[in-house]
Image (cartoon, rainbow, N blue to C red; front, top):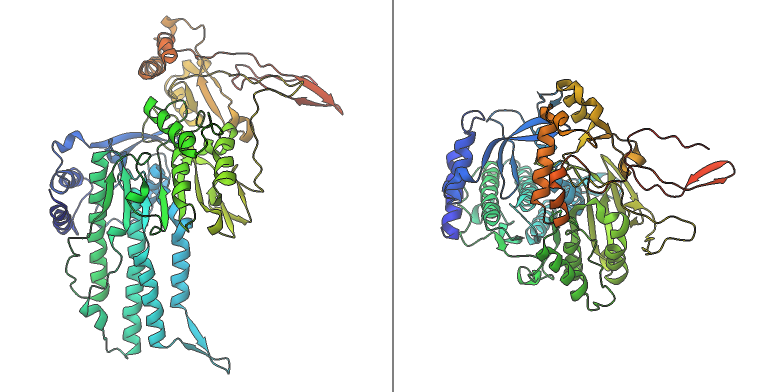
Length: 590
């Protein structure tokens, strides 16, 4: 299908389904219709799964539909179901459909775009709506009609001029939500102009501009994306075209007139390519762009492919201009860090504001120095806003939980004076956000190979390499013990850094020295260790493959806690604790 044919298919699809759809009758036909008619996908049922099982807070849930290739999670409701009304869920809690879907993606797009630009645009529009003039005697008059329309026109032109880039756009979630948000704001402007004209002419509506030209100025051609997966590119374009049709209908309802469909030459510029090898200026010149946002891949330093590791070396070290200075800087960085380096070079000397969802580990431990010392001190980057790490619920029942952060940044010359730090629903403001996600001066700890005198060397503790299958949340443990109380002796407390610092609880399956004939008596234990075996066999690390045969044990095993204590004013100080896993509760004698 050509681009114009696809856009026409999007219009026809929207017209077919508008005001239709029952969750329990039309869900499959609706999504299969999208894939076949709109996206020309052959064998559509091979690309979508219905009633996908997921684990949320230790409880099994079902998502209406899931597209594995693009990691799209779909939660839908029938026509007429209020999206604001709470519905009783399994587990006893009440959630609105919006809150229900929010559990799966934690509302990530808006956590990025709200502080990046949307909050400021909404505030600017509210100020325009409430604009007034004050006479010499102190009385207040509404702003004159011509002036008000001038300001509203200028604001709409500003919205239409903005350009956005998602350099790892996947199925277009961030771009689509951004387009919908900007168009809804534009529709609010159009409505304000419409109502203001009506009031100014005492009920005699004069819509000269609206009648002689399309009142819509915001175009999807200002929304750019880069994505390596060809199917995801198709999904992203289709999503934007459907959003375009949806917002057109909303505009029609405001101006009470029929607006012809938007010109076919407008396009959704989603480029199929590797954004770490492509010059972003070839997609959109940096002097034209306003905002970068996205959710780049979460691969850790130990889970990257050889190609991804080579990309990291090239971006972090080779393209730095001083490979000798930055040698081995890429070694321990998560894959997402590459997008920070490329973005920092792209936005240099411009007013572009950027925001990425990232693994929280890029702001912790050994990654801080090679990433943030380079970005801040060598590449002139500053953090404008950030979120304290929060839990990301994976769509896979087998995946370990991931903690993420969101970081907004820009060239130092264009940094915001007031920085914002979010934690849950709270927002704190200050002069500076450090790379450790605190309102504090930028002080970065530089790693050293040798331990200071008198301090023990750090070594690995227990390392499961289990794909998360030997680790349990407190909710998972409780659920399992209801079904199989006899396995309680094999489920023990598990303490990592988060548990040690914040006092949260996790548990592990501990089967050291347990005979296999005992393990197979439990359906739960058998299933879990088989999942461990599958995970270890699928690993690219040969050392991990070798441990598939002893799938019930940890790979690196150090059972005991070593520590060195020094008494100062009768207060014991633990200088070093090697391992966070424990089988028994240890008490230190003072």
